[in-house]
Length: 423
Image (cartoon, rainbow, N blue to C red):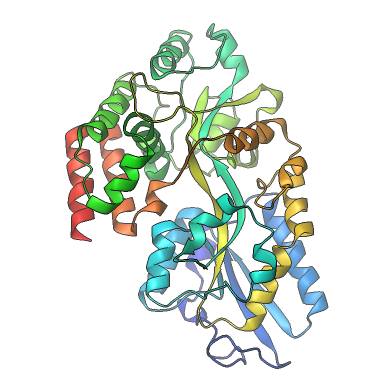
């Protein structure tokens, strides 16, 4: 998929202008032929086939419209989108996680304000699902998935190691890691090459130790050197010092046949800290664990200021390029209606973003995630999305360096602060 992505012509992302037959500024083609280019990260089943089916359905009803469906692997997508947005262009519809990255695109005038055009269907979404895409009372993205990061674990491995209950505190978690190692089981799968999976640990520890308000304040004063943030790094180093990850984890990707998801799905590790899409990736790249797969929230940290049931995560949504044709918004409305989203939830591809959609969750593990999220006392968007792109990248890079042993907790805090202050 990365190779396929690399062959895409950047010139094709014209932001709704050029040879598409419609006027700039989002006007309809008036019945002429229109091509809507849609970049998404749905490279795995079942969403890959699901969206392909929806494209066919839409095109059958709108013969003048061609939906150019372009699934791109997650990391390749981020790199390619950064390249085109830096040149002042976007695809007509593209995956977004909201937060600071989307805000920069909005400020650059690259993204359409959907508040009016989507007003009649925005009311169907939960406030939590919409929040990452809203700025100053306006909506710039349509959510399609929401969820949280937590630990996915292999019940059989836990039983073999004599772990009778899932860890509720950081101390219990470290004890579980020690028991798994003693039983000859790799405790944790990690795709260290891509860096973003590692940032989940530091982010959650910062949440549990410093609290959500401290993370929000850091976005204002650009100061990550406060003691609680350093302590988050120190706690992560406690884990790293136990050598809990699989051999070669620093060179491992996430969604490949030998990456983090596959290692977990093939039973070669006992746990992974990942979002709600983990079971699909485990099965798509490995065998999948079936009934042996379980889920538990990130443990609390003794003496921490954060609430133990605050959740960390986000979802996926779609933004529309500022100059995309009207047909782009219409197609987005089509794939965002209740029938389409309910079908996606029932097949276990996403978690509900529509009000009352919880009953559509059929998978037991995803139901646990949905219920845990529903009862969360607070919510923090992924740090590499919540903060401006350069800050988010520094979080990923510095935490990866800590995990690799080349940065101390203090150096991590200082590096993130320096990048934040330079923005």
